[in-house]
Length: 447
Ligand code: 5AD
Ligand code: SF4
Image (tube, rainbow, N blue to C red; front, side):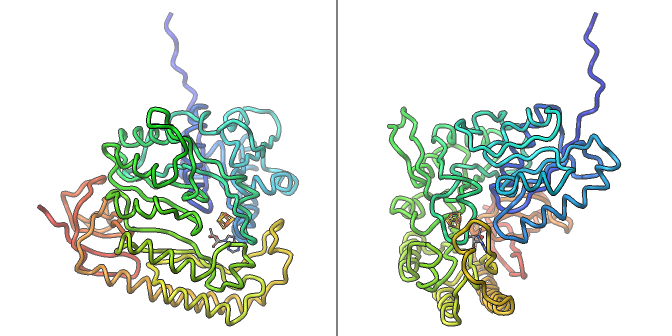
């Protein structure tokens, strides 16, 4: 007798990812973990056997969106009572019990440190919740990564944060800083390269605070991010490296030197400052002044003069005066950013700043508008300055026009290139010829 092949169709998994790149990475890993249980991913929520929302708690708007999106799933659950609905990520961590109470349609809640337990959880009867910070490393319990979609990949090297900025929920939702051992990261990078990846972005809530255990065959000890970058760059096939997100106080000499010495480390750095006012930086518990940040930028630019800098800003933090805001505008003028994310302050339950009175919404709106106009001006200027220059571009996909390829430049600008024989995954030299609002156009240079 021969075994009869199973005729059950694979179960379909729909994942919606909110928030940061760490969640993008986590969603991929959760899909792989559930793949071992026979799930394949789908882009269509209506055909799914399981819907998983991988959520973000950073600002109130992002967190509330989860509840409205869950509400929108009611008709699907009514049409298919077997549909499993899961909430993962930082809202799950922070508000797990409340989600179960407010949203009877939710079957499982899993925090960001527990998603390796997801395969058991989907098989459990009844509603389940796991928001522990377990001792074991979740990455040790996840299956090997298999299929990959393109030439770029994320690699989580560090998680959590011990900085406790007064406005931020991350230290509570993601927990204390933990760095993965370097041997695992080198192995994971080799594996990524063997499957076609050429660019790796190292991820961590405080990535430049990385302090992982060095492999014993490479001398052991504790490695900082600079050392890790040097060793990753030595892997054959790792052509580009980036890292995000960093705290100014963790930019050590070795990491700055890596920007000068490691050709694979791209000339791009996201270094959030949040505010340019010393009074507000202090109230935010950022533990540095505007002047110290500017001096740091000088040192980074001395190491890598063409580096493109980006930042995050919060406007209307409690107590922010017009003069404080003007200090932020002046800092932006002094640095000259390539781009930035900016947000109105959002009071988050459980954070120290949430105890303080908020500024009127009109003040926050006006400041955000003013700041974004300046950033946009700088973004345009930075793009215009690329015209005429030769840059590397890694093709990520075909463009909308026939014969067109799209990829990212060394400075992380999106670049369109007319290149009918171009292939995804090719790293080519391009002369930038034009700047559009959100991308550049250029011509491939053939040697
Ligand atoms: N309100 C507004 N913005 C916030 N951020 C973090 N917490 C808050 C908050 N409570 C912003 C910071 C951070 C980015 C990821 O999100 O600028 O760098
Ligand atoms: Fe949040 Fe970043 Fe501050 Fe950590 S360093 S508390 S993640 S803003």
